[in-house]
Length: 447
Ligand code: GLN
Image 1: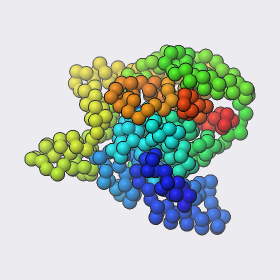
Image 2: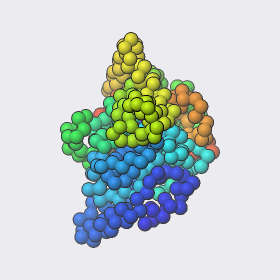
Image 3: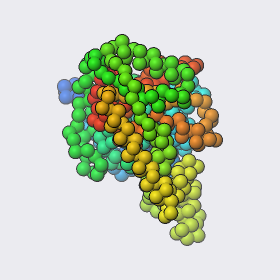
Image 4: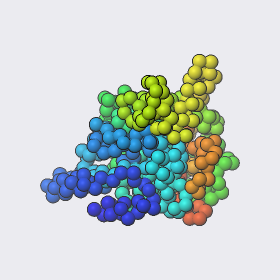
């Protein structure tokens, strides 16, 4: 009830939720109460939860931030949604996001932008900006997100909350509307790493309905929370600390690293020489996959259909022209171009080679350290509208996050202090494959 009341009081200003589910939430809460009374409660029983609107929810709208799916009600639950229901978490609503998870500011949403609870004139980050803002505004204690190129970590950083994207294949993509399938990964938001660990533990485990789901048992991500940091080697990629980050971000990150040293960790310089190629590689591979994934929205099977058309082809064209926003169209065009005959080798294959080089850089760096640390984003949250006319500027904000997805590694962002005008700064921790328990433990020791 309190979570619903906070959403009702604050959502008019923040626009973090696109749908709230009062009745089903109250019913689920009553069932949770019964489980608690019967002594059969788990760690998430009765805990209010928000799902990013990219996860299909049976009987509840799933818009994916798009006019294309403005009226779409899925006939089934995403695997993550099923798991969290089974864990007893109470879904109070669905959170705002950039259309089809394409964006870094939440301004590409058909439902209008989410606002940053720390400063309503600023963006919350994206694409999972609604989930991050919902946590920051204390509307819910836990929320899901997805991260294809930083969409959990960057909004966590802008909103001063904790967010983790696990190793690729850890969270099932079944029922998670696809953007770029080889990069998409579900993740968890909460105020603290401790709460993220509880949420992530309930979201993971092998799912035969996702062919890239890892055949590993569900992990207990809380297991390293109390592990001391003495002896921990933190790698600082020199490329991340070169020019490019704002002074106030640098100051907060440096102060957090000093705190880590006080807690017993040591820092070593490492190098990711190909990291500068991550943005160009990502902005070829992600649109290429998106152009293929989004071809299913043709106005025939589901989604928006134009009211008037002359023939089948005209119906496809008009439905897609009306249903998709500008950024989604831009990516479909870029993706179609880089995959077309004659350009495939020059762009797509080249980007795949860069992807391998970037993954190799991380493998070499992890010979020298246990975790890698750096900024999550080069800036704090910026003003609404500041970058909407310049997509390349928007893309450059993903400089520290996309390499992690290209390599399939786990990454976390935790609050590291405040920058200009009191806006939060996030510190990013990157782990080796399956290193999420340690990442969460490291962040927990800091917090
Ligand atoms: N900002 C990146 C993009 O626009 C990442 C988005 C995401 O992780 N879903 O593609």
